[in-house]
Length: 150
Image (cartoon, rainbow, N blue to C red; front, side, top):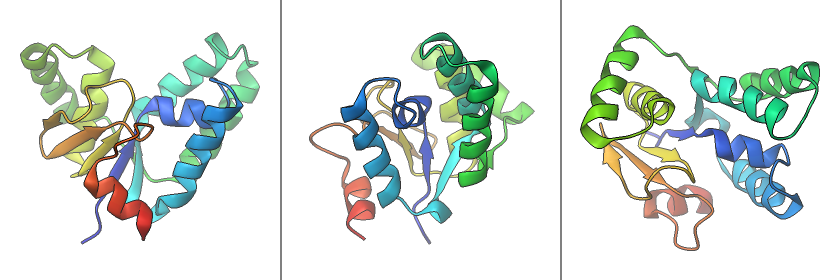
């Protein structure tokens, strides 16, 4: 069984050049090494990406929409179900996570992902079978490292 990886907003935002050309290259290199069949995007991430592209990157909403649609076509999406929302409330309370981070992590757990690639959450934090790992860190999680070497 293949390891499934969920992507957080920052990975896609960097790929969209919101943090300079060096981070864009790093994000695109990372994404090119991941198998599209074992990589998923929580629906919440697309909403956050749209907001980042419009607010931070100052893109016109139609251009931001186009980027969101492109990423939504590139990888399978994880829905935010009522069960995901209820689990996210527990996660936010018990671990003091921000609401939207809790929704994304809860969705990844519901989809049985093993890794959530995020620069925002605590590297190494594990919940519901999902380990958060910073893909831009100099020391990558062993599962991610193994996936990237395939």
